[in-house]
Length: 114
Length: 326
Image (cartoon, rainbow over all chains, first blue to last red; front, side, top):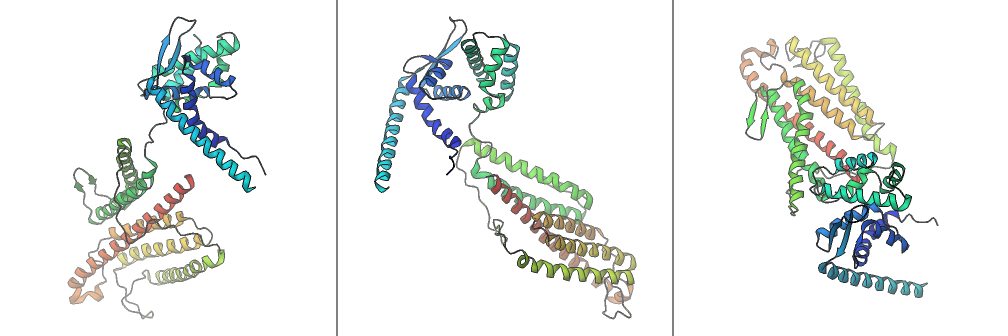
């Protein structure tokens, strides 16, 4: 059996996962590049050109806020989660936990079948 | 500031044209690339920025990530686009035939202006009409899509099922028996017509006595009409022969267009003084009166049938293309 090409499926799955990931990360203020590096440090890779449009959508929905900090060597845009964002994150994590539980149940059932 | 970075941002800016937050987006990208160049290459020179830009991705791809909103036309209306365009074009084609036949221009203000057209002008006009119809329908569907409302557009049931796309018959020889028989019959008819024309300069007669045939039309009209009808027979024969080797609907489309052109030429022939003097006698005025309109209506009916067939073939071709691209 050849290895399945999971590229496009992974992209679809990442779409939802990235939103939870970013909302979870922004419990402390971060700027874009620091988020990319932090995520890489956790063993996951996020495309840089995907992160910024996502941050923009989250901000538009009122789940995060942003502000430019001009005091450093160069201007950096810092992002932070809002109260609405926290509520959204809690809801999404609940969905995520439930999906995980269902998949684990099915995996257990399949083990018994085999 | 790096010229390369500014050129890259300019390119992204071009693809983001019209977006309110464009400047803000460009500032975010600028900040990220400078940050990355400094952090990973220890400098913000051209070489470091080049690497950071390459990692960020092509300008168009970057811009598209911000433009992934509503499509221009919702997928649910893709079929409607083709159906409505076909419907409008059918009306347009019919009105074009009318304009050619009656040699008049007319206006349905503010929807349509149909200029007085000759056959050649009409053939040139129809593609333009098709593009206009496509544009109008696309515009309406664009506004419906942008409104975000679930508009259920009506579609009348026609006698001709435009949705029908028959599955191909697997057996090559069986599927072509009918076509082969048709091609042989048409070839025989065309040859016979050519033989008659070569011998008598017409293919229309009032009697079946080939030793002493009496032509139906005057010599000039008989020759012209015969040549057009022989051309129509030859076009149909040619289409059937080609269809022995290919299933392409474009063959039918080509045949229909040629037929429409030839019917147009027929309709442009003067109908007065058409019949030969020998058969006219005292009945001539009466015969001319009903024959003229019967001929006209018959030709219009044939033109209508060919137009429907043409549109049906175009719809099936379009649907197949849509199915392939889906």
